[in-house]
Amino acid sequence: MKKEKVIVYIDGFNLYFGLKEKKWKKFYWLNLKKLAKSLVKKEQILVYTKYFTSRIKHPPDKVKRQGTFIEALEVLSNFKIFYGQYQSHKKECRKCGNITEISNEKMTDVNIAVEMLKDAYQNKFDTAILISADSDLSSPIITINELFPEKKVIIAFPPARFSFMLNQIANHSFTIGRRKFKQSILPENITKKDGYVLKRPITWK
Image 1 (tube, helix red, strand yellow):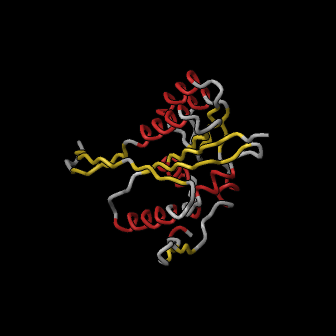
Image 2 (cartoon, helix red, strand yellow; image 1 turned 30 degrees about the vertical axis):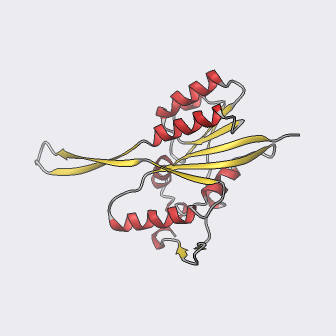
Image 3 (cartoon, one colour; image 1 turned 45 degrees about the vertical axis):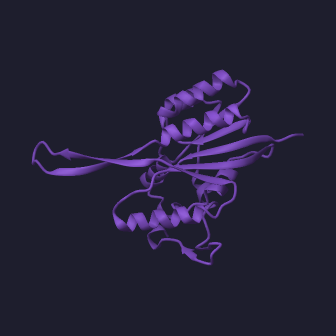
């Protein structure tokens, strides 16, 4: 019997902030492909995992940790990273007049929407699993439901995250449990093709 093709789409910052809210810092060092595979059923096959994120610009220690993590993910096969960007704007405190720089992550939801619709049109998946609780992603899901009713969209909510809108329009939804994360940790040390060894950040242990 032919297996269902599955592509998993991961909203990087939605997942990160869910883990952060749960104080599950030790799960930041994640093999995202392994996590994706753990969500796939026996009658299905994972054909690709797509990760959507943006590179942060400060502070330096966080930039370094994110860079190490992204390099570790680049070792994975059938795995692709899509980048958005950070846009900064200045905000003045009404009470004290102090000006702070606020950064907002942009383009992730657009990138996810484009990839999901493109893959549906090109018949790359039978089932799409979206790891996110961002209700802004309801539009591409509704469109897929309308144009490709034979395809399924499953929502896998990150920890401490939920969207009534996504829950309502998806074929099925669930929250990823702690056990899935525990079983999907990357090795402490990862050797790249050029021989360079990436080490798990100390603060992520």
